[in-house]
Image (cartoon, rainbow over all chains, first blue to last red; front, top):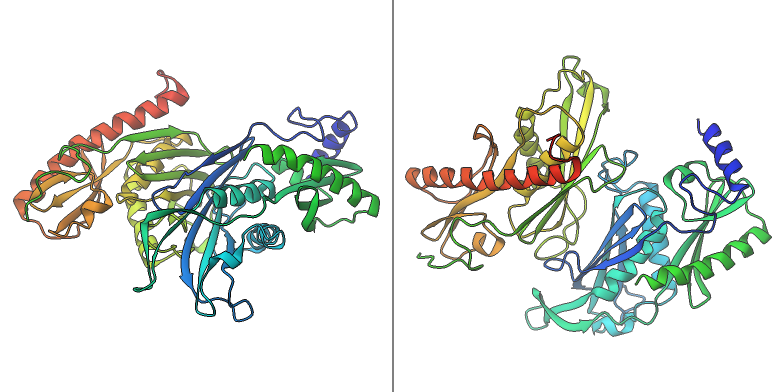
Length: 259
Length: 235
């Protein structure tokens, strides 16, 4: 069904051009981060736009029990809801595999880079710790939700202020934020590189996503890789991967500047 | 209990500050944002398109399907669990009923018009904000409409009839009655009416009168937002 589109795109790629006028290694413009878009209800929130793609992330915090194997650490839970508002292809219902993959890729980037200092989110060892919920909502899926969602998640974390916690009553007093920030050590950035035919490109549009052979999401911080996820039905060579990693690390600086 | 002065310092018939924008979601056939005070609703329209499951299809005309959803972080207390709840399903249904009267779906047998409403932040009046946004999104999608739909919540806080209650007023310890209302502004016909609280017949009459003026103000803003996208001539 997409064969003609794919052939047309590949012909353009040969001239380092894309349907929307970009070069292969250009992100759409603008890349923008807007903070505190839901200040009354969320502890932290942010809206990221990459071209026409728009993703919102919000942070809510609760106090609850730690996992038994990490009794002195806070808990991080990342979810994504691909609400049908954002694309004709999304459907109502429980998270499908696309939503699950998106949230897990964002989660792993944050978790493996130890972006949040979870030790500092312990209230009482083995009993009470802070639970940090990050909820991700695409508003418009014009392509590359991975990079937009990761950037929105880290932006919302940076924006968050811890709510007031009444230890005696074991109750959070929402609406009375403290000035304390969520302890962040690092700023991991995800960058997704796609391969269509023999061409490697960044920031796919939703049409490019339909025809891609493979993609690789690389989450890195200061040149160190923390998480990767290959997607797509075709294979990548060792050389492909090293080239993609190089591009991802370089491009992640561009994304980080928007924060 | 006496309610002398509104928490927000507004006059009793004064709406919160509003903002509206049409055409905010590229992938949708129609879309809009409506903000009233701290309540922010966005709406997207998809369709007419094929309806699944097939047994819902109506060979006489298309159907309207609305989905109201609060983002997990948009509540005033704990995180809201994602996915539909009894509350959100009922609200979706009354929103459908509020919007259907202005549509003529006889040209679209077997098809569906989907309206998705998402709340980014809530401070009461969310179903009304959702309806107001959805009406603009439907107009933006190019569907034939007899009128827009404008919605506001009115009610009684303490001893006063007020317009556009916020959360603090809904929770007023001296008692609050909340009456969400949607109307077709050109005719003043009411397409959504709910009530929670305690109110006399005379007070209800006053509240309904107040809702007409308030909806007219919202209607003006809806038209302005549509004109911003489409220009003066085409609205």
